Image (cartoon, rainbow, N blue to C red; front, side, top):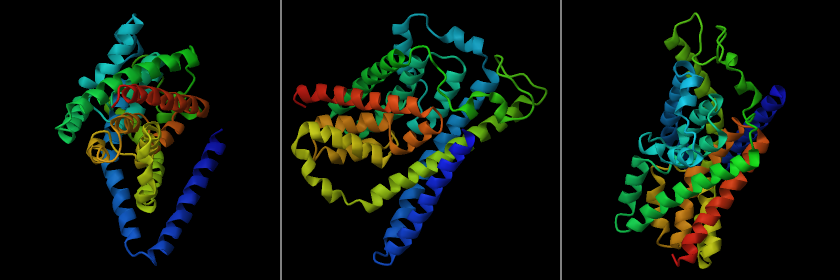
Length: 334
């Protein structure tokens, strides 16, 4: 399994290497392409990396200092309360989608029910004060967009959590094999028996875990950022000019666009504001909700974290739910 994973990763790196050579050749015809590409790639990496660091540290704190028993005591017995709490916790835990995957991984390893964890992962990048305020600032003359994004994201996140629970049942063996055993983080003999116990300094152990988590996620972020940059720089937006004619088509296209652009949920509203001049309300809602739940860089990080079958199942569920939620606004005439 590990050798196959390494082989696939090397193939992707080789493709990126060939792509860079191709960019240099294109640069002979358009002197600005390489400059645009590097600038866009660096922007995406600089926007995302601090949140990956934050997510890795939070994940490490959860693994080292918070016991399984403490986590279990915090899990509501009532499913309705659990899903609502998972969807709203971002109001006091404001992070974007760049940091959410390592934190969700830690929650699942600590025994948080899968449905709650998936609702948490989908909702926090949408329903947090920073994202709500940035959306309000971008659409200051259109408070309905703020409400649509927040309420739509809330409902969509809960639906995704419930559906994944129904599809997956109690089977929670979802993490890649190399991520299940906590001993892979260090060689001090730690075990995941509540709070990790070992002879070493806990702060040192926290650093080891956080660095391991950071490096593990970063390689997938780099690949995702590269692909998103290639789309932004090499694909002319003029080819999409006629898509705004049909509302349902615009919903699907806006979801695809948000996936490919891979914008942070804290800044994508400013792009959405400009899109509203050309595309219908329901399409822009789809852009703002879907991009925070699933984009190119996050999909690649998901494949590096969870088993392939589960990621495919989750992705199809997200696409279906966002289309459903956006269609409600379409039927409302928006």
